[in-house]
Amino acid sequence: MRRMNNPIADFAVIGSNSLARLVAGLLAGTHKRRVLFIGASQASYRLERSMDLSAAPITRPETWSLLSEGTAETLRLLARIVGRGAFRRIDPILTASTPRAEEALSHIRHMAMEFGIATEPTAPARLPSNHVGVAFRDAVCLQSSWIEPGLDAWNDKVGVERIAAESVFVDEDGSVRVIVRGEERMARQAVLADDQSIIAHLPPGQWPALLQRRPAVALMTAPLRPLPTPVLLDIGLGLYVHQQTEGGIALHGPGDFSKARRQLEAILGGTLASRVGQSMFQQLATSDGAPTFGRVAKAGADVIANTGSIGAFLAPALARWLAGEAKTHEAEWFGRRLITRDVSTNLVSEFASAPGISAS
Image 1 (cartoon, rainbow, N blue to C red):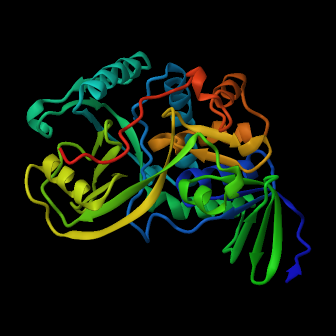
Image 2: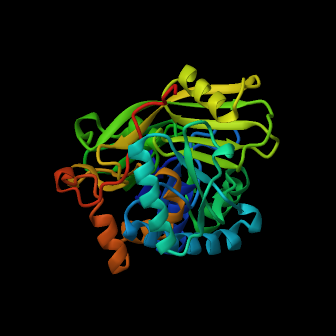
């Protein structure tokens, strides 16, 4: 194996989602860092495992505030580098079917309204039986299949080196060695920006007690009758149901195929159309329900986990934080949500979904 003569990069951002691409491009373009990006296409070649949506089951006012700022900043960036087709405005419905989830949904609604987000109860006839729902007006949903090629082109323009790596080695000090066509590239700091990169590359001896693995499922049906809104989120189950532009329905969340199918039948009020595809994967959650960031073991790779649907909208603040240039309130927000935090203090806990998809 030959060592290439290229300088050591500051960061190697590893991940396949919009958040990873945004962070890589901002670190290089805005913060003038040398950045390697290691991540395959997500939007075109596999079933939807996540989505970028500016509404979520958030109970902390400081998170709603940061999300509001980040959404505006992210949309300005995307409009400039990708175009207006990067996102659409929708009215997602958050639903609940247990007393605990209903109480949380009521609190979430009031938090959102405090930050200027219009909400209204959803008529029971539009929901699965035994569910209550709240529509969140004018939320932003990013169009992954549209923006991913644009983000890749932007990364190239601002100097991110996109690498099709044969092997990736993340050391316990957070540094990275990448093998490309038999040659070695290096970066001082790994940023593991999605669940799959954390599972694949975090040294086993540094696995944080805060992170929990759970089985998850994604499936897609052939076109069906329209949902009451393009996106339904059952907050008690962590289950996202998303109507595709051609009429099919994508579902992702914790659990297994049989339970996911029964849950989707309950949402649709009848038997499903044929499945176009399905897959199982592992998903990460935190024991206190809150998102988490920062260096494992205080000196290892940076991880980004449990951001739910809002991760891409945190990218500008997150890039500033990683570059050591965060605003005071941003530094405080990320500092309270470190991967090394003590969950017993309960300062940042959020409503956490059940560990698996219910068959009810």
